[in-house]
Length: 376
Image (tube, rainbow, N blue to C red):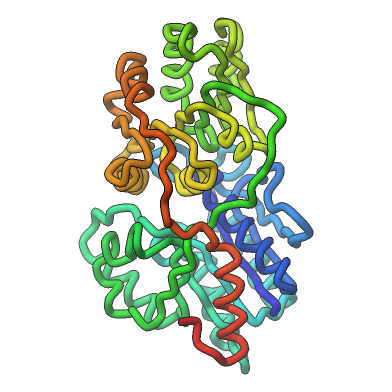
């Protein structure tokens, strides 16, 4: 199998992390895999011997996704877009893939239509077109614009052979956040959640705090530091992981006033192992963090990112709390008092049956389809 995978992360690193796990699983299954990334480079992704091709980076200027900027924080110009588009098309021609996987689009990443629609057109024009798959997480951002769902459905019908939903239908079904999914039910394949491999860690902390990529984690991290100061007797040792994109000035200011017992880190490759060793986790409710928590069966408090009308993390956190797998604090209500209360009521790790084998199952589904079999 020759696979070309496209991913564009605009704010955090979750999309890149999930796709990197899928790419590695395809590679381990014997595939020739090229991962094309359009966001800023992130050390450690992808892992293994997956071939990475980095496009000139694009990211969101802010958490509201108000504009796209380049690595110099300048607005993305039409010339910049044209250059990226030509690079992407040349990469596709060189790879000549059997499978083209496009992460998030058309459910999201509409800002990238300038290069994704020409890419799909190029793929479909080949004498033997590749299988074209949309790769999407289980819970989608709530659509707030009229006609957007119908536009997405039309693109799925016209352009995609397969929708890989990286979730367990017993936990969340696509139609719950994309009601028109029933019109393309025959193209949908659930893979299970894409969790990483277990990783051991030599370190042990009472509390592990993580802020994802870090761009929108300032309030969470600052509140955790103050909570650690107040609860040092009950929870003496803390590891706070800011994420690689946490504002440097804020990190320097926090480092200067850290109470005893707190270690401030930027990134930990052994993050899953830290969770497995910890008494408690405090984090946002991003897809990859939740996968790591479910795998580690760690007591957890979730403070989902909800700025700018974001709904996906809050929906995930509510579902986990309802299942007795986490405590949930709304971002708008976060304070040291509320965080301390949530820490006290966080449920003990419970047995769950949520499928976490999504990366390997993605490889199996694609292999079966290319061999002429069905995935079901």
